[in-house]
Length: 471
Image (tube, rainbow, N blue to C red):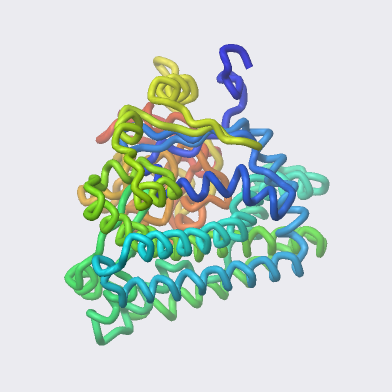
């Protein structure tokens, strides 16, 4: 592209973020997707910009490219049931290896390890984490092509867009509990809050940082949790399964269409389960990282700007203070079949080029209706939530407007009367959770976080996907 731009800024661009995030947590994922994933599966993520600036991250692809790459992986690896089950089983084995290492770290006084022992522990942990991500990326990448593929196949016989969207919403819905639902059920049933805390202390971890939640966090929530939550959630799952059968009969859907929907639904559930274990991994990365920081006189902030393999270099005695300091103003990667690091100026230029802008005098946005909720038209007060770790001020009944949502948004979403996101589709986190909560959700309403302001009143039409500023 002109001026060394990877994508036409006036073309169809896929955005993920900007959301809070630190590079170290994402560096394994980067390495996997231009190197290890292709080596194992002979497929590749499309060309990508991943930018980090002011503790926020911003992912950019060309829309058509990522959908084509995702469709290839979906058809080759996720749609065939034997392939899907075998890769999932392999992923579980790598996950169990990580859990074993995490248990070992819990029992180890890291301050008593030699430098060589600490390095070996860090290296082994990340070897397993790479394998976890290589296999666990099948549903991740497939997701970006599976939805458009299902829409295309359904469109061969279903001509009405409203019916098509309804069918897709039902077919792609997961038929398993999310890990947040599992935690709530456990919380409602537990008689030992301390034991529950030890199992779920990582619940608010994210790519923005980690924390160990105290028992008081869970004790306070236990007083509010619905005592019948397990029965209600399992009833909801049964209804989801029943709805799939009903819609199959109603529209005479073929076994091929049902199999596509089942593959997508399984992939959505797999991604949710994977996130749970990622949150746990981030905790143990930080446990080891804190020992490296203490031992080699680095700050946590510095080390969170490093590649995972650069931590090994530090343990080996290499001084990276100057290199990491340069990344403070901004850092990024541009990768496809190889990876190029981007300095602060390049990162800023790409960020400014591809970040969404809205035209003046625009008073509405439009996206895809992912959940209709209880009314076709509703109004609410906007709360822009760019950082889920800062959701304490979110009030019951507000309309959440976010770049996108991820599992760490769940605590605010439970208070929301509706959810609007800049990006996302029917299989996005915002879509799935909003359906669980039975609240309106419009995804892919580009520019919503820029157009609307805190305190604005908006009208949401779940028939058209239009979100309109009222006052």
